Length: 155
Image 1: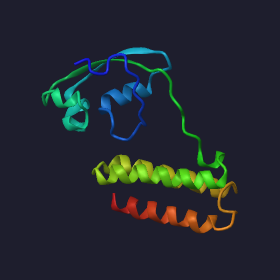
Image 2: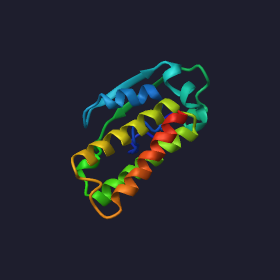
Image 3: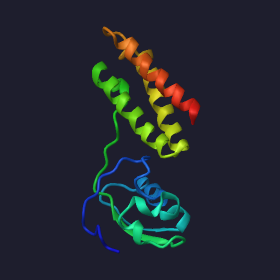
């Protein structure tokens, strides 16, 4: 199907939005690159679930899939330590929320990766002094850390 031909599509990697094979290939692309991506069924819609995508609903289980993809651009997320304290805390909470979405969808390996990344970046931001010095920052950081660790244990 050519439902999205020529239409820009924005997504965040690691959020189980695209089939795994397609996302893996997109991560290797450079801006303005056009690629033909051929995926075996297990890396296409079989693992993602056909209901997750309007095109995927029409792909029979066990079918290999071919896409033509152009990467228009990408944004690399800033490290928490690069942000002002308030923004860093809000971003850490947002990223933890993304991990929670994956956890609730039973995508435990992906959720684990997200929780671990939040914890690693929070530790780095606290160690460098860019987070945790302001009024109440320490308590708020502690809450995010505790929540991530508890969820990580449940993964």
